Image (cartoon, rainbow, N blue to C red; front, side, top):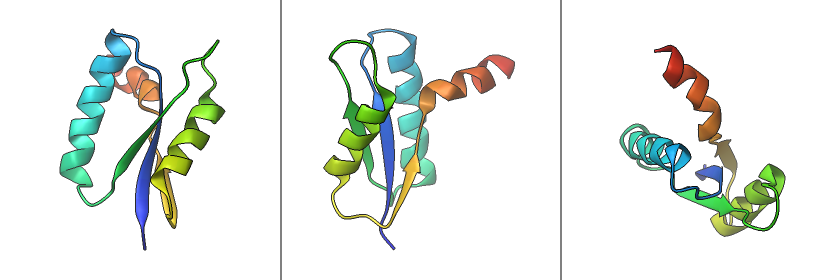
Length: 80
């Protein structure tokens, strides 16, 4: 079974990029066999769905996709 990680993204040069670097390095350890595909949306207000679709297309032929919405992890990080 071909599993991939899809990550909707927009570079911000700030805390989201720092958080993504942390999450991506963790994925490399915990799921090294799952390729990570970033989907960027840069035009206008951020469109999460468009970014996910971009990542899904970039991933090619896959059976299972794990959606990594790393910005949602912010609440967990702040609670720890």
